[in-house]
Image 1 (cartoon, rainbow, N blue to C red):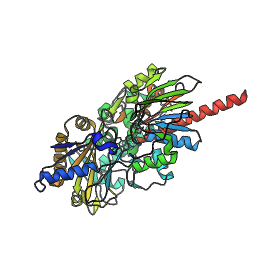
Image 2: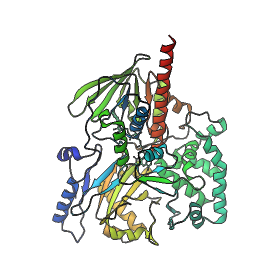
Image 3: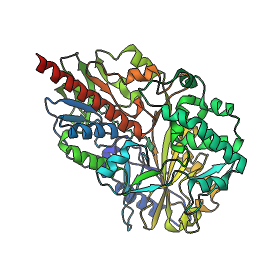
Image 4: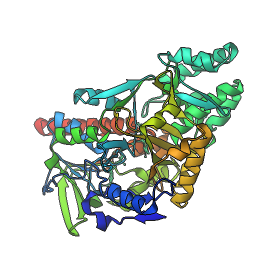
Length: 520
Ligand SMILES: Cc1cc2nc3c(=O)[nH]c(=O)nc-3n(C[C@H](O)[C@H](O)[C@H](O)COP(=O)(O)OP(=O)(O)OC[C@H]3O[C@@H](n4cnc5c(N)ncnc54)[C@H](O)[C@@H]3O)c2cc1C
């Protein structure tokens, strides 16, 4: 049985695009009446902290108009602010953050608890980490390796172990030698891979074959190949046979050697987007503003039309530059005048996409015994199953409820995004019970978050984030700059790298205009 709350019922406390379906469970201990009551109370109390934000009234004119208040748009504004260039952000949703979403749950009689229903963690090389430190946000960091299910066996990450030490518990000496040898071979190639920088033709050839085929050619022991597959597939949200070898290698950079540490924001990732919004000035962001048309003429500035989605009022802002951070697959919802170049359109239409689906599984605190060994949590676990990556959703909280945050990826995510959620609920309960017999009985509820039709970018064999078509996406036209993670990588590092690229481009253009007019 389901209770479904419509957005109008919950008013502005609902997060845009978030499907809100609450399962009602038939546990013998709880009568269906009291469960319904609990569910209704619980549901009504769900909020996201970023929702209640002052709306900035859009100005008639500014220097840079930014479309989208996800990480890319906020990061671009953050850099523009440092450079003292005026900007304004138009965001279609009633909240900032885009794919950064933290849900705060208020269960009756319990302290607030939260978990991220969007992105989870930041790898060390992600420029976001520097910004997190600049903004003095409380964060935690972890070693790069995770517990992993390989060839149907769970290898738990032991307490206080180094990444190298952990690998010794998984692999035999010859297997470890093969894995290290692979890292030594591809490491220098991976270091050469920089979007926009020229790539050697021999390396570029690797875009023609799949990552699976490339790994097959390396003749690695099967357990080593499996470790690479399981580690990379959750990063790209699709099968390793569906991305080009060049892009598989680009993703593998976080696992080279001892791997990169991962960072999480204490209190949820929306603390980061909130801090960015504060730094750039909330008055510089207009929510509920859907950009419908971007018109530009070289040298004559830009004009951005938007629809205020609450009032249905149409508005216009004029400026010198536009930064669009609209995920590329949604870019065709915006009219461009003149139209985007045919090469840009080809670049977008020949990309592939990774799928994600999120589930928050509610359990009593005592259930933590299932994932605790020697007083230490073995989460996260790369499950290589329909459970995806199993994170501790609320690691810094000691309340009566634990939340497992499942980041489901690839085909299981694609299916979860489509099938009735009771089917998914059963599958997740059964999957967890297979891993930890008895846990299913303790599940108190599950919340689901869909990412449909696309979650992250991927590049199939024949394409790459380093090829000419991708460079074309990154080439500004008529003062219109395309940013967003989809223009650079499959992750939030792409959001920050793209923001930096477009802001640098705009600063150079402003500088060139200044020198031209002073030479006259
Ligand atoms: C479930 C999930 C888990 C993830 N986990 C990780 C992780 O652990 N680590 C990691 O590094 N990355 C992760 N990612 C990827 C990460 O979330 C993204 O790379 C990052 O959030 C992208 O930011 P962005 O600003 O480029 O795009 P978005 O966050 O999508 O922002 C784009 C914004 O543009 C707005 N918009 C769209 N169209 C219009 C329009 N016409 N007018 C006005 N506004 C518009 C959207 O509403 C949105 O707010 C994950 C992604 C998902 C979906």
